[in-house]
Length: 640
Image (cartoon, rainbow, N blue to C red):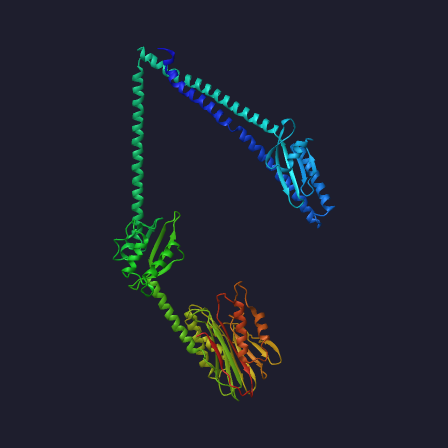
């Protein structure tokens, strides 16, 4: 067997030939563009220098303008130009540049640094623009021009073309070194391949041709290869069997998990659905298919688009739409489905109410839970009906107007009642005790629900009945307290202020059960808060006694009674209106008619709270002593 037919050459020759051709081709291909590459580098470098020079000139012009002088008038112009020239000298030396400044207005050279004394070169500078300029002895320079219009300058930058030759030489040397390195690597690779692969294979083939199988302890090479291949096949088969076993185990676990999930979904009373990113049904339970969408359960199958299901539901009349406009309902429902927010209610034609809670999944799908809240909705409607009934009861108890004043009852009244909820625990009233005595009462039962409304109605009714018997205010409050205590397991209580004004003596006798002390607006232009001694609320502990106090009223004096909803009214910053603001508002009402007093105070409270939700009822009643006024008046403002 000749050397050229050996397996070594068959393997190594193509590899070596390819590497040599690749190295030579790489060098030839790159060498063709070396000049262009070097030229581009020089021009880009010179353009960068031009930008620096232009920035230096602009900076000096800006400095000139900042000093507030005219840069176009000598000697300021000359002063700043000299500063620019000094900067040019340093820049030219550092970067081995030639810099010339040509005055276009005077057509003369103002500055030249780093430029040879070459008339031919200097003559060509006036029109040089991104070009090569020739000089003595065949020397050439790269030129770049910059026009400074403000000073009518043309600045020329020069770079000796010898830099181009030096750069070209360096690039060629680099590529030549790279080519030699590639050839050396090719040689090393050939030696490695020969030792590691070609030589052992060539030796093995030679021995087979000479019928001299290698000695593997009595096992021929073919038997050795056969045994190894068989072992590999057995290992592959074992790995395959193990992989199939793992796949079967994981599949069984996935099926079991899916079965558990399905059983869990079927066990809940709510409807459940999962839609994929394409808005097609992926999974749902029987409640969703058969109860929430009866008659179209055949559509609620995996793969059905959400729009198809709701459109069929609207067409079959399963949902209650506004004015029968199915398209508007479908459009609104799709918008909620694409951008879920808070849970919303959906009314069905059969009277049921369904709460729909939708959320987006991490991959962009939609999961929804449908809950039948019909009983809850009906219970809420019954509660609303009870609240309306309680409100009507309150409105029937509270006075709609006050009796006209007269010689024996020279009093004028005004009141305001603004409940914070459907019903209120606040109450007020005027009671005609006898021909000369008139009672005024205001109270506040705990809470804002039906229980508070009932306690308020019971308290006011009992107090009115006892007051008309002519008992004193302290006695009346004690009797009302004893009537409220029995059976009060919820420990509800109420606060009450009750006063009786006697027109013959101009004296107000009053008692207080834990209520806010009223104010007296004196016609002599002062505001006084009554000193009340009672601080025990009614309805908790029986057999209490309530002290009585008196105050005399002059003509034009006004008694202002209120509940704690006025000083404790809060704005959006959770600040309270306060007693101080109430006193200030009352001080602005001295000698005003009683209806103006009530209107002014409530207006101040409403302006203070602005858009903040009301936390308590706002109630007040004012009584003004006006003998011989002759103008009957009755003013009650209620939020009916």
